[in-house]
Length: 53
Ligand SMILES: [Zn+2]
Image 1: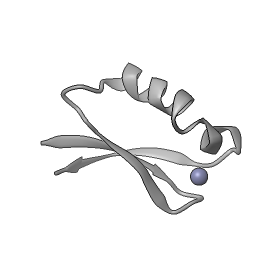
Image 2 (image 1 turned 45 degrees about the vertical axis):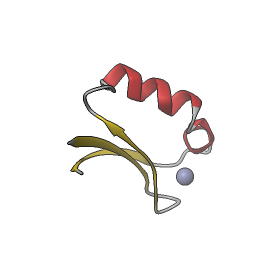
Image 3 (image 1 turned 120 degrees about the vertical axis):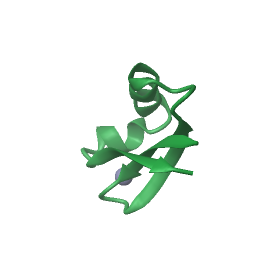
Image 4 (image 1 turned 180 degrees about the vertical axis):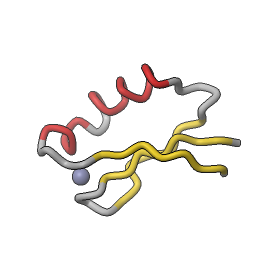
């Protein structure tokens, strides 16, 4: 399966992995605004990378 992995460069950790079948770009930005908003608000560099799981 392919995943989008949300990774925070500042915290140096993976915030979550989302199956690409269920999470398109819109859903991911939704997740960033809700679940991971703390990082975004603090100006952290949050990257999306693609992984095979
Ligand atoms: Zn962070």
